[in-house]
Length: 321
Image 1 (cartoon, rainbow, N blue to C red):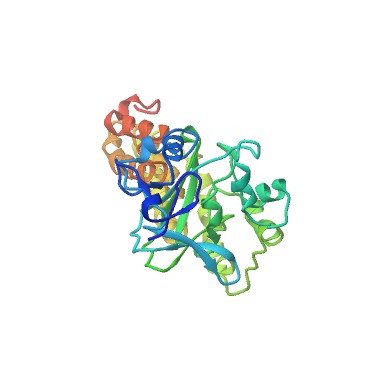
Image 2: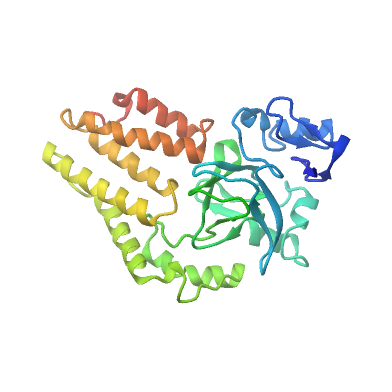
């Protein structure tokens, strides 16, 4: 079986393969690569070793896909909420190994053009590049989602639905169904994804479905409304929580997995704890928020640590009555 070195990505086989003694899944071509990958020079595998993270050549593979160049495909059945990939995030062109960034599209482009095409921008972490994540293609009906975790300097790729063996793993490069995004930003989506990634969504694409587009806008308006509602009385709070539940239901139907729902779960928690009589209602929201943080941010993140603190001691939150 041919494997890839998890640090330098070189193809290896037979006696060249050196497995991590901890997880027995991640492989290297040399002791030097293993040592580097154990630290922040690579994945920081010492953090992830016991977490059963998906690995190349076992759980997924990079191969040619018609009309898209390379893509990432499942090598086995990947249940919903599987952590498919944990990829180190490079924050600048200068810190990215030349051979890594030079292997990316466009083939004849400059390093800056390769960076601009393949990096991801987040408000929390700015521009970051994941070398293996860059092989994952866009689909408006994505079956996975990705998030950059700044305090871990890491991208996590998570399945948001069951993915079958042989199925291409896909994400959205620019969300059409994010309730937290203003309509003005969603409206310019096509003018961004077409010239930058050559993505053409025809009238049959899910992102053009009027019923769904209208529902996303309704969800956005509800999302903005929730924190303008009064929470002075018990009835006020229960009324606000009904709106939170309505938004969660819409998110489960239209949003891309658990990640965009996390903020709504947290909103429900913050509202419920403001009154002694509604305080017990907080539990279902903080439980779901903790789950979302574990799935998308991982148990190693500061977001998860904060969620766990509030799960165990909700009165520590500033909103608690």
